[in-house]
Length: 565
Image (cartoon, rainbow, N blue to C red):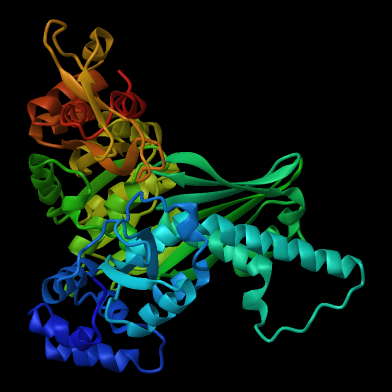
């Protein structure tokens, strides 16, 4: 049943009625709204006063409207053709079906079902009666990208081709007041970035192949092709990204690095750009990060309850050194930033030295390594020690000089946290010895080591249960005669037919006790150290991975990628 106008009520008043918002918070949001085109609901969510889900529940309870889940929903072509994607973005609405009992009624998902202007405009465009449903702003934007994004990209590409043809034929192009933001390449690059963010991509690969340009997104650690264009587009795409990243557009023969910031759906993202020359043209890789993603609640990292308690105990040490280890892309930065956010208090001086600084943390002094002016990890660390620090974070220990200074700092009353690229917890100690650190100093300074990996989580909507094979039980060190149920990926619209949605960490936490201190000082091998750590309660990466497989969180294939035995 379509929404009646007599039910029209301001969203802020409705949320106050539902006791999810205070008058003071609403007044603050209304002040911030002045001079912007943003809806009041967007501002309330951005400020953290409420969540989108709170808005949906309040509207549902008050107005009797139904909530619709748009995840993985694919809209038929006849509905797509009714409305242009730009109009849907303007109002943050999404048409998802025609009423099965009345072909003249269109079901419309809305972030704000009180927006009568949106309802009226959509009704005029479609010549249909509108029945509003409630959905979160995030889900609607994702659904628009999924169903209309490709068409928008194709339109931008076609516009670019037409304009180039006009210029080549010396045909005058009509003046346009819309400015540079309306240029087809600008729109295309913006669309590529927006879709990547909304699809949870960590990296964008723009690759020059022999006959085409391929755009791939790295989602949940795996690359997947999203778009392919004619290779004549590459110079324009490359130039636009270089301009945004502050790079030299004339230099195409040497690798370059750049950086840019952009706001998508009210959230700021930092994008690091890297370009390298290849046989068929430049390849661009854009690494996307945000402060929100890097600073999680520690409970979201994936620790088991006993591991979380161990993590807290290690971080409470007044001095010593804590290592977070793992390969590139294993979530080390997220763990470190989360830990620093926990430790960040007014009475504590935290200084970091990073290459690069991945996210700005309020209240923390962050130093960017700059080799051009000889500001290395080692030189920065020496300067930091004269800055009266309580906690020092070193982005990565790469050489013996940095290793030596870090250990000395930890012994002289500072808590030092750093990363290393090693395969397991005990391997970290061997690496430090290889860098010239004496074993007795390691034994005295190391508080603990956290080795970690990221595994893809099985999509909860399509995973399939089955019995484990004999080989799989052997991999998990389980009795062959035991019937063991595990899950495997299947694929659906929500997970883009991959069978996986999201990632979680698996950890190996070695907290150094007196027995381990003695063994480290004596120079015991890794095998003895592992046995001692396990007696102290440590579980290996493989053991934690097996727990997640048996719990249906991940698959046996992901376990094997994360841990080798």
